[in-house]
Length: 392
Image 1 (cartoon, rainbow, N blue to C red):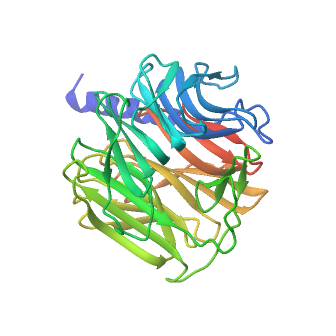
Image 2: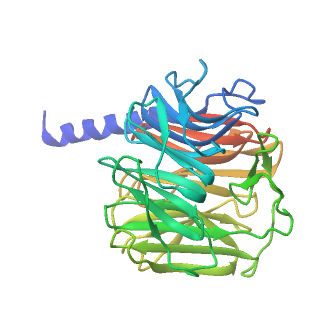
């Protein structure tokens, strides 16, 4: 076969494979078939194994799913440790047997590790108040979480499979924007995002955990609660946004982006390399995708979604320096809302938006098994979780 025809055949096959893959909701409104009412974190290790941080109104923990249609139920995994609160907010698996989970630690504990994929043991040397916003597998038995520990905030890293974590905290009074998510493209290079939102329409309540400006979890009822939207326009809407970077494993941090009193805050961040990353934001002006190609020296707003329809974006995944996915959603009203997954193949210059998945309020986390297979945890307008699937 001539080389030109062979190349064309390969490209055609790749295009056909991509076209055959699409995002779908594994459940339908009113989503009563979902095996867990609450799914806050998701980490899939293969096409037939996903780990979930979440629970029901009566039980909370880390779960495993081996039927990834999610129709055959879930298995709650053993969690042992000293913490009186085993409320899980995040999970990160390196493979089917090794991983970490985390959430809220009161007095002692807050993170857990497994070496067999079934029993999660409490990490050592954690005394005080701990909260993991998100957890990450760095490969080679290394894990990290982004969150707070007593008076510290930033990153903590484990080099022994989650048995212990060592803080790589931001300096005190580093930013008004509290940390939210992170990316770890190399052992030394780390990024964290930060952000906050106006709270005048959503006063603090005992037992609630704010996941985003749009969503909170109420541990008293074991249910999600949609927070009242704070809509606005212009440049002074009371949000804060920050991105910071470390090039020495968290020993020192540099503030790369900060906007206090603006119209959005940052959520997830993902890097294809130490220099090429994307971060997503949301707020009064909808959802935004920021990108850097120079290691964070400049961050450019390359795409906006849903500026007039309540656009939201909590997670982004870069599969390469040119390909990325963003879990967008919109919410005009309860009956006019849904998820719309954004996809770029040219580094963010152009975006293809998938057909909307009705009734989905927020896409909280995506987990890619490979370039053509992924799962995502999402929250519906009925205030229970559903699972989105990408693949043929």
